[in-house]
Length: 474
Image (cartoon, rainbow, N blue to C red; front, side, top):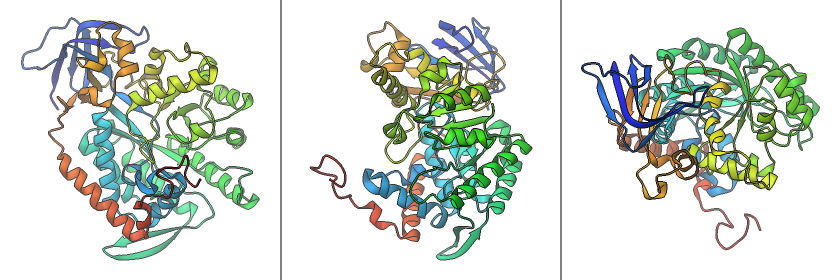
């Protein structure tokens, strides 16, 4: 780590309580922390970064996505039903630690190049590898090598139990029957080894599946299994002092979570589409946070009342739900999607101003992860997670209204320089400590092998209805 770095000449968007924006300001970083902002004396030997023509932001925070998805995002060719079928077979029974390491490196590199310095990855809850600790450990280690801060969320797969897994040794697979208690023990081991590790580069939250009452095939017995899984996982998260998350909330499920005692200020609920006023009130009263994924399939099926929740004092983060089956980690895209999504609902172009959208991927997202004291804004004493966006591009001109241009017109490829924990991990879009070709080669090799192990080769074929039809299956 470079002990002292000075970033000078840029427009510094602090995202502090006053939302100060300082033009041509200096930012001093010492030993991984922000030391001063404004006019600073440059210490001898400091690394200097010229930010002229750039906007200097706190590192972007993606508070909801999935481990594994970077390698499986093309399967099914855009047909989400076929993609789901492939994932539910590949993750628990077709993957190795090599798969999870390759996915971690690919995801972390994409996030880094999009200006994301902290990203959440759900590792459990629907068939991921929580039958042993080494899969999640390999994933987290890959993030650390790339240099992106990770909130990894191991958890329990959905009932009925025991779940079917397979562990591979070369070409030989050993079938495994893994109980709920087995998975909870793995979660406990991962908290012990990963939470707060590597100078806080890795954090852990625990994940539990969401039950859907009334869905075909969801019996009373199965609902009881979901309840046991969620309540047990939540009890463990509280006993270990880590956060709790659930992916896939929709009408009625927040009410069930509240009745089961799952909510609280350390709970992060994803999607939350079509929740009613009672469920919204339960979120606000409990202090639970919401991960809003405007580009996800759930946001096609229903609407997250993000505007209403924030108006009532709630915390909502804009997230990618990346990267499968059809979306990147580009939080600029997802901010823009969110603004249009809610404006269309209200038929009001004044809804969700760009500044609020930017808050939802910085300080609000940090609050959603319980990390707002450390990251999410540029303030003295906070960790030096910093992004420089190059504004000297045709699609980002003319030069007036820079913050409006940033939110409404920028994209991931405009991120020029990234610091994480005070270390310059990308400069001029180059990541010198990472061999990108090797990352891509590892990704290609591991997904090919995982598809072969699970017999999912047909998912790489072009689906029927890709051409000339107006919907799949029509």
